[in-house]
Amino acid sequence: MIQIIAGNKGSGKTKRLIDMTNDTAKTAAGNVVFLDKDNSYMYEIDRAVRFVNVNDYYDTKKEASADKLLGFLCGMLASNYDISTIFVDAFLKLVGIELADAAWFFEALEALGKKSNATFVLSVSADPEALPEFCKAYVI
Image (cartoon, rainbow, N blue to C red):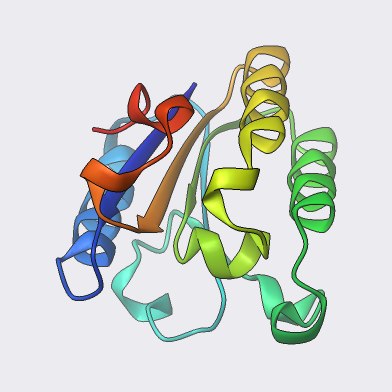
């Protein structure tokens, strides 16, 4: 399953994502992971959550690509079958493509979620009303 927290910059998406992460960590049957582009929120995330700075593995400013992010997520899920939820902050910066061009990515992510029984919660910096049609079903 995919869920999107959408809003313009400064609308409180990251705060909401952090709150959801910490709430999920208290009740989740599986492992919870939080992905971000840097360590700025590391100490706001519950210590039971696996915090991952994606830039520790590849430089998202130079190499951000949808294929890399999808491969990164596949690798995480392949190495740990107990991951139940992955929260992704700054999704558009990590994926490196325009949201309008990401329909294939969401299809692949949906298939990955079904195969691994994982939920993906994405923070997307965009006006919820301006999201592409394929994204609107995921907005929470």
